[in-house]
Length: 288
Ligand code: SF4
Image 1 (cartoon, rainbow, N blue to C red):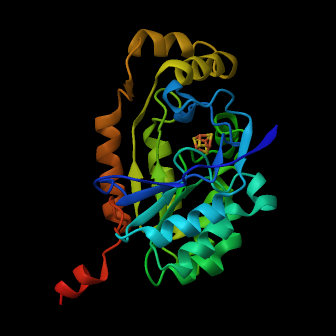
Image 2: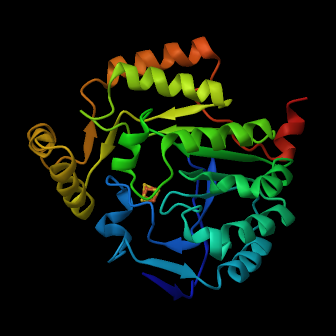
């Protein structure tokens, strides 16, 4: 189901840029997400989205963005894709993300996109323009196996389509990498999966990979995730409950070993384990 809403504000600012991506402003053009990943944190009660399957379209988003971006005194990276996917299927028709990128490009702001969709390649032309300032596209890919990615992220394009999109952007000179998180305990935390993901990322031309060997779990999100585990992976719900109980952090018991394999494989294949940040012009000049 889709409804239309009016947004009061569009860009929210962080006091300090995010330490792993350098994001200063966050932007959400929709509420709810069609990708319906079984582990999605946006189902948590703190975000106050009663029905996560209902997509709310912020119909005034582009007007708000034009107005707010003009008033920003500090140029900083605009991040999108943490609360919903900016390239979920509805974007093909509503084109809010494309419109927002045009505004961002005209205002010469930097942007970081997180997505699980190959629809992002539609906007390669604008992303190339923004890349004169700064752009990074992070594809979230956590399984090298398409059938498994379909189980875990039923509404999103499968992993191989995401890798193909990454390759296409990278061949067009757009900085792209992987957010390899959350690697789900007892499902995706094998040596083989991590080695395969890093290898496929290298083949696709990824500049960086940001890993996360585990997930966070709370209230409504945990309930939904456990219900899906019960249906999709018999016996795993009990295994999670025994190991993590009501804990927020559910790290893979194999995290240390996987971290080691990850670092070795990235070093061998020449992939960074941190992403490049936007550097304001004044700071760039001080480097010379
Ligand atoms: S794509 Fe991201 S926001 Fe959308 S359901 Fe999946 S994890 Fe949640």
